[in-house]
Image (cartoon, rainbow, N blue to C red; front, side):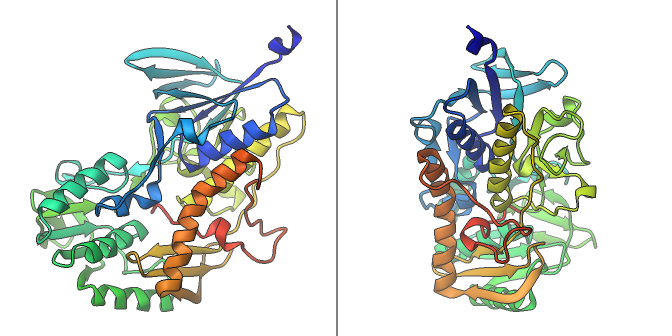
Amino acid sequence: MAQKQNLQQIVVLGGGYAGVLAAIRLARQTQKLPIKIILVDASDGMVERIRLHQLATGQQSNKIPYQKLLKNTSIQFLQGFVTAIKPDQKRIIIKENQTAKELSYDRLIYALGSSVDMHSVSGVAKHSYNVGSYEMAIALQQRLAKNPNSHLLICGGGLSGIETATEMAEAYPKLKITLLTSDSFGSQLSQLGQKYLEHTFQKRNILIKDKSKVIEVKAQQVVLSDGSKVDFDFCLWTANFTVPKIACESGLEVNKIGQILVDKTLRSISHPEIYGVGDAAIIEPTAEIHLRMSCASALPMGAHAADNVLAELQNSQPEAFRFGYGGRCVSLGRYDALIQMVKYDDTPREKIITGRLGAIIKEFICRYTIWSLNLERLGWFPYRWPQPNTQKKAILTSVSQHSTT
């Protein structure tokens, strides 16, 4: 009876890279403690988001059932949409099969991720596709299969736009592709990286229009800030990302786009019993820890949040999150890639790995994201990541994972 009274309920909201790793790691470390862990997600399986640009060209992309990911763990999976958090009551409202139900928690790990922003620019939602969700990638795949000789306009020059452009150019050589970016093309890369990227686009006959800001998307046409227009047969929007409004609507402290603000330990600055991880969270500016929306950031955040929840359960103080980047991996089709090496703070170095070797490294890293979840679950190899205060060199396989931006 005493054990039941002391039972602690930990709820993880979101079944992406950060949420799943946090749940699995915590379950592995608390097997002998009176802990109940519940993972909540709207889908019945985890989508490999870093492969959605491949799915859009007809390649296989796994949607891994949570039943398989959580096999032989004590984690309870609950499929449902989170509609509200009541932080003062430590309760969550979930819509499950059209029925609302409440779920209590002692600790909450907020990992609801991000999505492509389809509403901040007029006409985007009505006239564009994206590769931010499984369903939309499938829809784009079907459109491409029917129209392989048409004109595809990609709006957004971040890594998602770059990867999708080259993937589609390889899969559909007769497809005319134009990429628009509001910044200078490849601005997030070093000079060597930019040159290689420009050469790759020229080789694949992908037209680049940089410093071109889209202010409106119409049927088969975009309007730029200088008044000019660009026609298309269909449009792919990869320009901006946003996060769910749940944190903001529930009274948690958030930034201007709705990411939950957390301190150095990844706890909410307004409600410390809530941890924020992955794309849906951002460390407060005074902490001076730079993180970009990416799988590379999400996995370490999820693991660290699990460690800190365990520390609190054992009456220890949670530790500050330490993390350093090693590189940015950009696939340029199935047989080419660009590995941009970076400093710990994500500043590009004048060192790149390209070609077939780059593609092999990129594919290994994509596979490692799922391997790391299974290795953690089996207890064979707990997830580790570079921590600048304790390591001199980054471990590429831990941090050089595909950016979602």
